[in-house]
Length: 161
Image 1: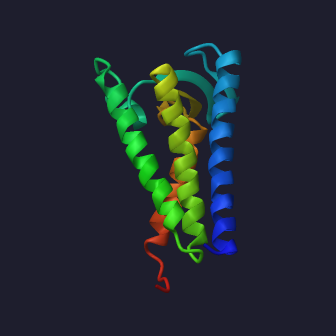
Image 2: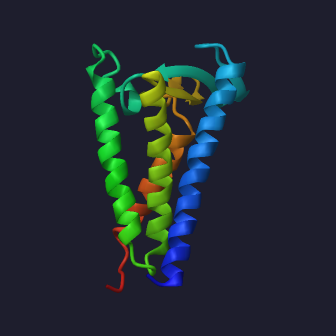
Image 3: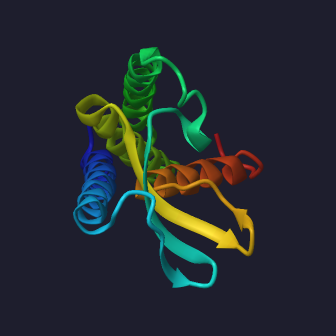
């Protein structure tokens, strides 16, 4: 293994760690300072709003009988392992892909941690306009979305193989 590849892997690992840590700290802070289901409006279109999501994205399957927790933990472990292996094997020249995968992995591990240790994911960011609301999300979801967006746009670019 050459030094450049090792430095890339270290950089990716630092991104994963930073996203995970920022996500967990932000969730801890809002759980200490916000009341459940009590919005704190910061801007006309943005509020902090503490919720617990036992389902997947957009609370999909959140009304299940409890089986979904273990299902989403298993899915999270499989996906996180696959992304970790992809990152490890990623050629040095695909640096932006590595950053995108690191964002996704850091976010996935943040939400996986919540599921394993609490049984739900802490969400607290709410975008809204008048009566319209985006589903509540967190920093991990944001990192996952940004990483997925980068991967999506990269899929349409020409690359040297």
